[in-house]
Length: 162
Image (cartoon, rainbow, N blue to C red):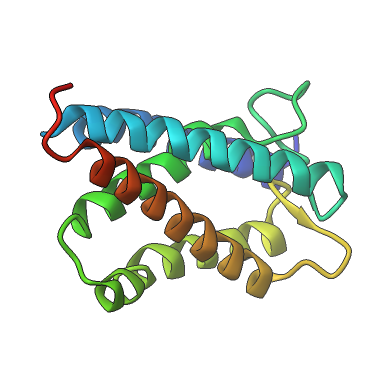
């Protein structure tokens, strides 16, 4: 195994373990039901978006923890939901402009890491003109879409017992 391949594997395993350790701390807060819904919505949303982009040939994951699957499960089931949980908790009572401005501390590091991974590792390959601009816009839209879904669910549940 080449040095680059080993370091990519170590990076992937380390970030996945870190995300798994942090995930319970993000979910087990009040209101618990809201954070479980955020987790489920984010997993479904990102899994299907990722599957679509991989199937259309925009993204390719050369190095994966689960090689038989086309998508990147650690990102779809751990990293992205964790980011979304913390974003939703931070913006719980924010106004619309606050929602937009508070995106950047989450999106910018994520895009920097993805760009680094695309250029220097075998973890992800961008194809068909896909670039960091596309990733940034799609992540921002997905985060705001999920945040809107959760806001609607909260609005519908106001004053109801659950």
